Length: 406
Image 1 (cartoon, one colour):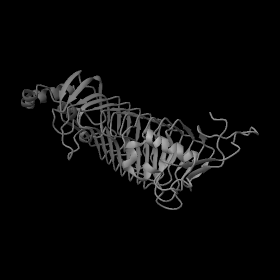
Image 2: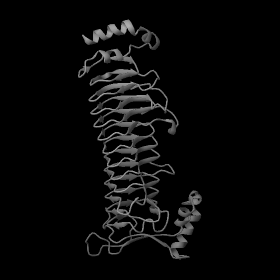
Image 3: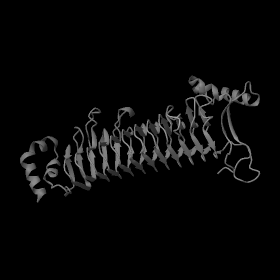
Image 4: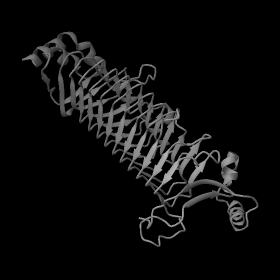
């Protein structure tokens, strides 16, 4: 009955919109639905934008499209305990200043966004001062545009205690988390963007079991303390200035059980911002990267234990000889370790020591990176190792390298 009243309202008052857009608007159906009810529009395509400002479940059943007509945000939610599921949201506006998106969740508590398809939008899903939301199983595809001109696939601003799970983001810019604490990101797949994820002033977030691939940077943690990254896979991050995992101005990160594969730099980290802070890298795999880990700054302070370093062109790079030396290196698996384990205790008989010879040329002189792995530098490096012209720099020493290698 409510739907029939809404249809009558649209016939009387919404004919102009129909004539202009060629589509029936969804807003009258939303307005006619009682608070707390479930709205299941008939299958088809509807004109937006639309706003939900009361507790409501909007269920498209996989057969309802809301077309924003290229104006603003396609669907905005401005109430608590709203559910949006099974909808196709498309054709948002193109204004970065207005953060035109497929879906906006604003000043809301307990929203659920599940199983939607969002495409041809500038931003995908925007959580703005939203808490305790569940964003699960959505597919978000951005517009074809230069990378920096795209919008974020998912954007959180001042939003806390949310769960972002099992979403697929493709051809968007970033998944951005700004001024947002205590969120969980599980099982998302992010590809063909700029940052897979970036956290800015967002402490205590948990990032677990995500796949990030073919981005310029994988996961960047900026000025965000107590972040946990576990069981993620970051691969094919090949931008010259990018890294699979990047840390700046952050402390107390737990980085456990991740795989970082085929990146320019596996991990790039500066020193913790305060003396008692530590980054803990445990049981990760860094394989087939140009540089496995890179540390910059004059002091270390990281714990690097039980990790596997496989077939990296360079295992560890530094901006200064002391940058990695004071880290706690212990029990790592180095594929270029040349020692033995005569007593069979699983620990190499001699420490793993990493020195740099001609490698220092391109690390200290960025302009020389173009010639890295060239025959001339390879020959120079060979001669340095054969008969060093000067005492090589000790970069790190692992007193208990793992043996046998796994």
